[in-house]
Image 1: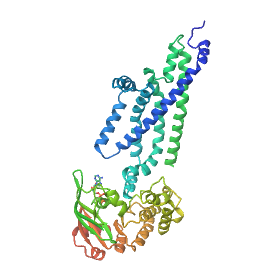
Image 2: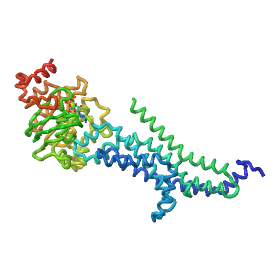
Image 3: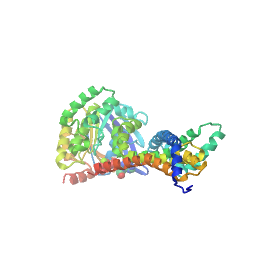
Amino acid sequence: MDMGPFAAWRWQRLFNDSNIFILGLKNTLLISFLALLLALVIGFILGLASTSSNKALKGVTRAYVEFFQNTPLAVQVFFFYNALPALGIKFSVRAIGVLGVGLYHGAYVSEVVRAGINSIPVGQLEAAKSQGFQTLQALVVVIIPQAIKIMLPPLTNQAVNLIKNTSVLSTIAGGELMYLTNKWVSSGTLNYGPGFVVAGVIYFLLCFPLAYLARKYEENLKAKTTR
Amino acid sequence: MIQLVNVNKSFGNNQVLFNINLDIPEGEKLVIIGPSGSGKSTLIRCINGLEEATSGQVFLDGEELTRKNHTKLVRKHCAMVFQQFNLYPHLSVMGNITIALTLLQKKSKKEAEQVAAHYLELVGLTEKANAHPPQLSGGQQQRIAIARALATQQKIILFDEPTSSLDPEMVQEVLDVMIKLSSENITMVVVTHEMGFAKQVADRIVFMDEGCIIEEGHPTDFFENPKSVRTRLFLSKILR
Ligand SMILES: Nc1ncnc2c1ncn2[C@@H]1O[C@H](COP(=O)(O)OP(=O)(O)OP(=O)(O)O)[C@@H](O)[C@H]1O
Ligand SMILES: [Mg+2]
């Protein structure tokens, strides 16, 4: 029998087990979606808070961002995986995955939101305040609708990174594509060749269109504003 | 209508307003002049809470402006026109004028648009209702900004150098709108370098230098017999 890593029978076996990869894709999509939602919620709240003039609020958001940006996601995920049950909090692995990835990317989203809001001239906020809008109201009706255009490309890049980073959850048996691929590869005949190629292709098909859209959008925006 | 009592303002260690006392009755057209950096903008921004006085009190229609109530008081009494127009570029001209009416004054869309149409006509830009601000000239943008300020139908409008960032050929169209306004019972506080406008419209001129009110008076007296040396020096520069 041909024992090369890409031997034909190995592909045949992968094809037979394709439901495992489809399940992995589904779980990766689900976890990514929920984690992205969490990251957006956290990111917008912290991003807005970080533009406030309140020093305490600023300090807290800064600490959060620096902590999550400067420790590895794997460490955070391991920590949640082990610490939460110890604290008596019983979450499914999937929920821990969503929490870990969501909190981590929330820090990055927060920075995107902060930069987006700061890119809008201060006169806009002043105009709104001079009309009698509360700061928060002004942010929602005047500032964010303008800033969102600037935030969209980096937010999309965050989504791409987030999808890729769900693969870290394979270390805690996260049930997503990377974990299921690895499990399939390790059980029995070590089909790592076809296994990881297919997993890689699936990740690419998820991420590349997003990255492409973000780049096109940004180019259009640049062309518009420099005209 | 507006009272400033012993207002001081510092940015860090830099004190920019010194013990300002000013009483502006309802309907007065007050023009504030003075050299760059003398604190004119800071002064009028203290009136609508964009800056908070370090000490002293500001009253709008008898009510003291505080950190808690300034949004509410400003909404009720006071609009502002900025040097850089500060129109909302993501909204149409109509949207710029109606946003405060629908969201803050709770007018219906239809009612708000009727009010807006009235003030658009007043500033002569009815046909631009659906344009977006970046498509308009500076003069047109500033006239829209004035319409936006008027549409809220507050009693006070603050102007911070409304013509200073305009190309010279557009200054007059904006001044004309302001002159037209001056016949109404609106309290206007105008920071400007347009001395012709000041002479024509002002009930009173206030001259500021280095954070203090140096001199004030009726335009005729003020321009013909300035009392202070500093005023004379400033006027000689600005009137060439
Ligand atoms: N936000 C701020 N932070 C720190 N310093 C400020 C701030 N705003 C104004 N200043 C300072 O306060 C002083 C007065 O400024 P202000 O803008 O009130 O002057 P002005 O009379 O309006 O001048 P101009 O004619 O140039 O508009 C200046 O020295 C300025 O540098
Ligand atoms: Mg100024």
